[in-house]
Image (cartoon, rainbow, N blue to C red; front, side, top):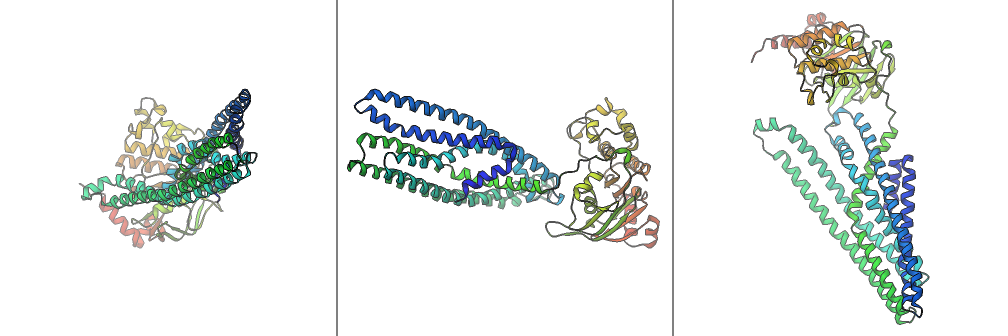
Length: 575
C-alpha cells in the first residue's frame, strides 16, 4: 500500500527545494489540525460527564478547552491551505518549465504524435488540477489517514477495546480505499489514453477539413475514436461502482463493530451511560471522515496519474543537458564552419528510414544545394543539420567537433518554407538575440523596400498572423531574422517555392551577397537558386547518389539532369 508515500514523494521530486518550506508547513499544519480535531472530539467525553454529573458548572472549563482547540484547528487549516496553494503553484511552475523544455527538444517527427499530445495535456491542463490537488485532496486524505489512529490513541484513556476497534477499523478502511482506488486507476488510465487519441484525431480532422470536404469524406475517420472513448468512459463508471461498494461495506462493518463494542461495554458496566453517549459523537465523526474518504478514490487516482507524468517530465528535464543560449557567439567573430556528416541515419518513429548512411562534406563559406525527388530525405537532412532532429546513428561534425542537436541549434539559423511571425513589431520578429546592425540586415535580406512602405519602419506592427505583410514580405523578414542571428551556418528550406519571381530574385541575390561569410545549405527545386550552388548534393531514397557542380552533374546525366529538365519545363506551365 504505497499510495500515500508515492504521491507525496512525487510532489517533493517535482517541486524540489524551492517549495520545501511550503511543503513542510502544509504537512505539519495539516497534521496539527488533524490532532486538534481528534482532541476536540475526545473532549466531548469529559464535557458530557461534567454536564450531566454532579458538578455541571465544570462543563464550562471543557467548553472553553473545546472552543480553543477548534479555533486553533481552524487557524491551522487556513494557514495549511495557503501553504498547499503555494505548493500547487510550484507544481504548475515545474510542469510549465519542464514541459516547455520538452517541447523545445521534441523531435519534429513527434510534433503530431502521442508524445506531443501528452506534453500538450500536461502543460495546458495540469494547472487547475495541480493548484487544487494539494489543499482540496491531500488535506482530506491526510485527515482521513491520521484522524482515526489519533482517536484510537485517545480512546486508550477510555477503553482499550474501543481503541482497538478504531485502529483496526481505520486500517481496514484505508485498505478498502486503496483497493477501490487501484481499480479506478486502471480505468482512469484507459480513459485518459482514449481522450488523448480523441484529441489527436479531432485536431487532425479539423486540419484536414478542406481535403475531406473536397473528397466527400464524412466523419468515419473519427467515429470509431469517439465510440472507443465513450466505451472507456462507461468502463470507468463500471469500475467506480465496485470500488465505492467495497468501501461502503467495510465502512458499515467498522461502524457496526464500534457500536456493538460500545453497547457491550455499557451493558457490562465498563462504560457509563454518559461515556457511551459521548461515543456517539466519536462515531458520527468517524462516519463523516470515512464518508469524505469514499469520495476521494476517483480524483486521487487522476491526481496520482498526473503527478506520475509530471515527475517523469521533470526527471527527464533534469537529465537533459543544459540549454546553450542562442546567439552566444560574438557577431564579429562569426565565421563559416566546415560541416561533415558521417554514416548518418535517421529513422522515423513509425520505422520509416529517411536517411541511410549519408556521408557528406560541406565546405566552409560555400553554398551547397540539396536536391532530389519528393521523399528523398532533403528536408530531413536539413532538419538534422539544424538540430531539429537527432540522427538515429552517425554524427554531425562542425569544425572538427561532433555537436548535439542543441549545440547545432545554437550554431545555425534557418529560413523555413513558410515564415511564422508572432504579433508585435518587425524589430521584435527579427531581433532575437543581441541587437545586430539592422541596416546591414535589411540590405542583405532586401528588406529595405518593405521598411520604406511601412508607416513606422522597424517599429511597425506586423498584425495577427502577420496579416500586414504579404507572403513574399514575410519570407524576407524570415531571411532577415536568420541573418540577424550571429551563426555561421545558414539553412534554407524551400524558402522560395511559393514566392513570386521578384521576391525569389531578391532572396537569390541575398544568398549571392553573403557567399563566403556563411556556410549555406539550401533545399530547393528552383533553378534560380540551384544555379547559385558551389556544390549540388543529389539525394535519392535517403542516400547521396551524386554530387558536384551544376555543369558537371548536367554533363553526367542521371537523377539531377532529369530533375533539372522537369524543373525547366514546369517553369513554363500556366493555369
